[in-house]
Amino acid sequence: MEVIRSQNNEKIKYASSLKEKKNRQKGGVFLIEGNNLIKDLNGMLIEDLFIQESLINKSRSIVSLKVMENEKIRVHCVSDNVFSKLSETVTSKGLVAICKKPPAVHIGEGHVVVFDRIRDPGNMGTLLRTTLAMGVKDAVLIDCVDPYSAKVIRASLGAVLHVNIIQTEDLSEVSREISGKKIVVLDMSGKNIYEFDEKGPFVLVVGSEAFGVSPQIKKDATHIVSIPMPGEMESLNAAISFSIALSYIVSGM
Image (tube, rainbow, N blue to C red; front, side):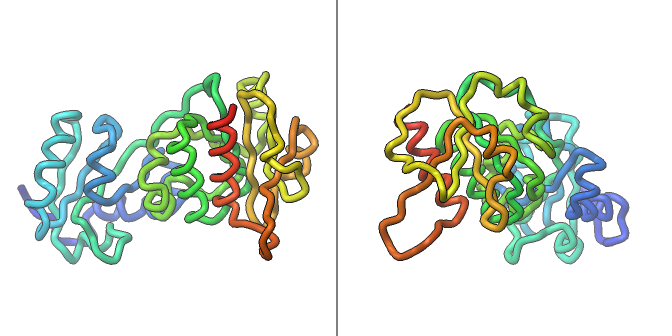
C-alpha cells in the first residue's frame, strides 16, 4: 500500500477540512477517530479509513473487519507526521475514518429527549450517552452544538452514532411526530420530580445552563419539573440534572 507523506495531498486536505462544522454540513460527513469507536461503527457509513503508518499492525484487524462490511471503503496508509494533521487527540490510536452521517428517521412511539440550545460539547456528549444508556432512541437538538464534532463524539463514547438525532431550529418542526406525548420541561422553578407520577410517553426537555429552556417550549409544556436539592448548591450541571430526571422517568413510567 502506498504511504501518503504529504500534507498537501488532496485526500488529507479534504479530511482535515472536516474538523470545521461548515464542511461537515456541506458534505454530510464527519471524522471519527479511535479504534474502539470505529470498530463499533456500521461499516456501510464509512467512506475512507486513514491508518497511521507506525500503528498499522494495531489497526489491521479492525480495517479488515470494516472492509468486509463495506468493500467500497477506501483505505489509506499515512505517515506519522501527516496523520497528526487528521488526529485531534493527544495520543493517537492510529485510525481515523470519514463517515456519512446516519440518516435521521421518524420519531418512534417511546420517550423522546429534547436538548434546547446546548452549546457545550462535553455536556452534549454526556446527554447523548445518558440517552442511549437509558434506552431512549430519539433526540431532538434545537440550535445546539454540532453532535458530529470530535469533542462531542468522544464525550458521548460514540453514542451519537446510535441515537436517532433530529437537528432543528424549532420544536414545532417535529410537532406532528411528538403529538400525543406529554412535554416535560426540566427547570428549577418546577415541581419536585419525585412527586411526579404521570404516565408516558414523554418528551423530556433540558436547556443550557446559560439560557435554560426557551419560553415558548415552557409555555407549551404539559409539566415543569425540577430536581430537589436539599444541600447548599443552588443548581446542577445540565447533563447531571437530565441524567437524574431521565433515569427516574424511564424507570418509573
